[in-house]
Image 1 (tube, rainbow, N blue to C red):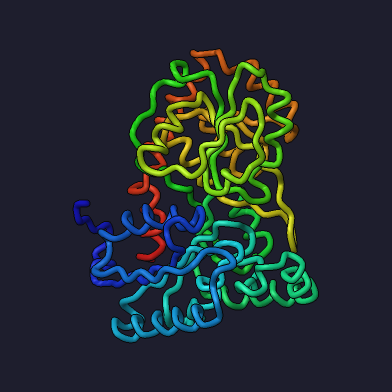
Image 2 (image 1 turned 90 degrees about the vertical axis):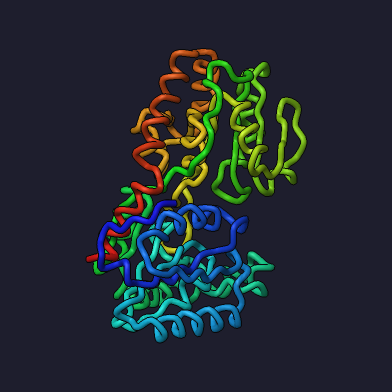
Length: 365
């Protein structure tokens, strides 16, 4: 990547970047493209990687915090910016962030409106869902005040307009900046109208990602249309006629998967937890845009904003509505190809090198 400097002040700065390991979840995959887009603006980048949700120990937090402070001390607080990827249940980026107002701290919130949601989810507690709630529920009001205090000197980026509004409403004293989930670089897939008669579901299997709708969608969608499912954890889904489970895909396998479906389905439900509804960023939608693949889902959260680009379509959150739209549209080649071209435009406007400018402007402020 060619070295370029938008603001000369940053060329003498060090970025301390706290993010999950690649493969540990959506924020970990996001982090790789993000840090490479940010790297040309800084003199140095120090990456501090950690485990995904439920994997961070108290020792991990202490080690990360010590390393962050060491880097800040070595380069000087006036020449260092600390940035982290905040997501539900990831403890290192929340607990290890400095709270000293002399240290410039920014963060990206992946699961608005709250930065961590479950700040005590160590590996021991994460083994039992019941234990998580027993620990969390009695103290959640205190936790929200803790979140308010710990992040009050930070600039918080949220990867959607609706998510930023949600965060600002819950924490009115925060500095919240709305931006977009960048679209990663991928090679073009064939035009949707020429792909096999199939729809896809993609992502990590966990509550809220829509995989619970798979059985009902299979009954409602025309049996001539195959459903292909890929992503980490999908290999554990029950076997169903008319559903092909691909499992985890990376590299050429990911290219092949997206090239084999005419549209991607995202039947995401509204997710409520302590203190309101979560508005998670959608790495799956960004991946669909990257492969110029139309996306259809429920009218919830960030998918509404994706649909506004013309590359997606949303319906009231009910399997019957989504299946009806799939059955009516899957063979409409002109419609699918038009949505694919809209995805091409969105892929350009949301490219990492463009989205990173929002962060650079704030870092340079």
